[in-house]
Length: 198
Image (cartoon, rainbow, N blue to C red; front, side):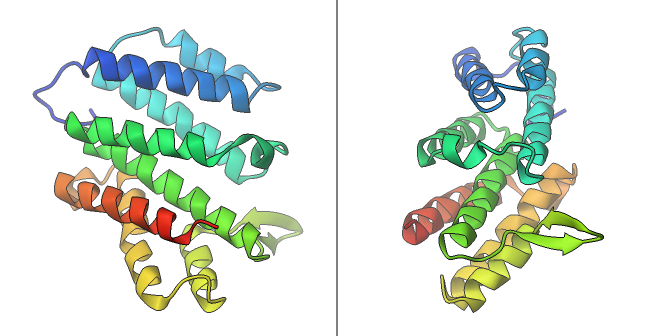
């Protein structure tokens, strides 16, 4: 179960906002491939940690498809406003004590920002392997952006633990970090994006 074990429901208003925002996002981004939106909608509406966890799982699948280049129109659709909305959703989750899905959301926004920085600075976001093009890992992009002078070593050293925290959250290692660390991550990532946006 994601979040506090003593809570059996997510705050209804915030859940409704997250639910409708996510459904809208999936409809808009996967117009030609509606299976994810259909699956998300098929969960029904229940403001429980279990439903929240299932929804996060569907979002992880969406992210995997995006990362692996399955959406050719992704760059033209996703805007900074969408990621701002995801950070706002993460803030609401944190306020309700749901540090784990918040950490995944913040980390996903950070990784996409690194990818956009690479593209804006003519750095490759994929690497060839066995005749295929594989998306670079976030820590690799972080190092290459620093080497290219897009941001300094101090910024790189700030990004590294945020990526580690996101990985712990994504792999269910919820005891490896605290709610306070996720709050600091939120503040740091927000500042980093504002500072490095072009």
